[in-house]
Length: 134
Image 1 (tube, helix red, strand yellow):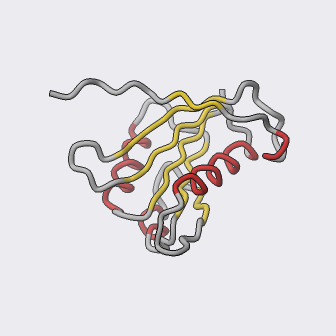
Image 2: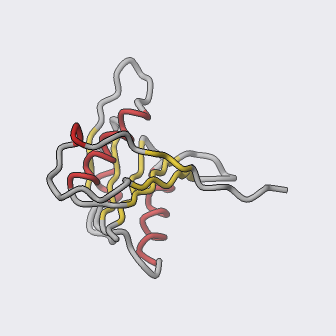
């Protein structure tokens, strides 16, 4: 099973650094760690020379609005093109309660590496249940 973690980022960098450290400390690191930078050139320095190695995909911001769906799709397309079967998307936020929002996705069958995204049927999204907060 080939996995990918896709993170959408437009700051804050502290959350991103903590996520990367958490992934490195896990018992199984993802096969791909993809960070989609939404007009955030500064994150390259945060991710450089650390494990797991991050692939940065650029996603320009237009009219000041964060392109969350487009960024997620760019990250997912990159993961698919590089053989991922399962992927989890994260969005770095400044929330002190929940620094990341997540959802887990699975392609119905792993397409061969190099399959163009246009050849893949619609992806299904199954958000992970969150524990109740007090």
